[in-house]
Image (cartoon, rainbow, N blue to C red):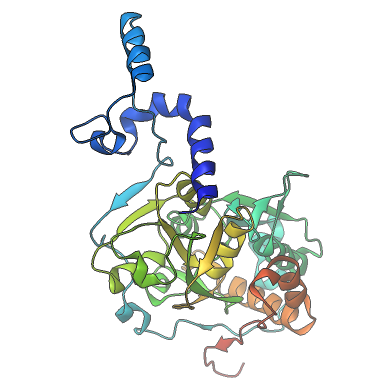
Length: 361
């Protein structure tokens, strides 16, 4: 760890000491030996001893000041249930979707058209994809732009969209409970997820990478053996860790912004997820860097509820895929990439669609 990082970590810890002291009972921190207060630790200097004695005489309790973990964080050292496996990814053709047709929005999505707005679930803390502009307070980013393009094709107005904040863990449930029409939240298309939701054609292809502190010595996934790694709960990011490493401690949090805080507070050694998300994190902290080769490909799709007798969503799938075809054809997708994701390098182009075979109409 570099001297600059250690100094910055000390400043963060000092700023949070009051809050940490209140939360210490629920927080996870260093043990007494590491803090120097137990057997084998360094001796207390005379000035500190005098201060401690005065504090004790004044009736002021001493507490170990540590930074609390993000709200809802879960620590795992064993493989949790429900993670997708390689068998899941081979059980279907995950990218196949319904082909766009020439039906107008009034017939494709009558309920949404009558409502007058499209309801989209996303993350409000994913820098570059969906986040609040600090200058305007408005949601912006690659996923936000895509949602507005879909709304523009339905209503003729990109402003007729309502955004609702979702975590990675509750985004599928939000679709199943009809809380949102679409989920546009850097959601990887997998066969396991297809058991519960329908996907559009892919709109972006990311690759899993590792993010670490500059100078940490971590340069590839194998270097995470025995380390602490942050992931967002409900994502596919942890699967590769359990597959490749024998010993790893995984901190699962609600948002990627929580992972940024965790690594800044030295609660984890690294973060792993898609490169598109990691480049947004590095844009917020120059002490962090993306390391190692590209790992698993992660194709992103728009999540849509499965069709039921009372809610046929096939028209919505075709409507979304129609927008994806348009933004590929007219250059809108490349402009979105240049605006938000150029930090990853030159545009790779939008992924080619794969459509399900259908009988001619």
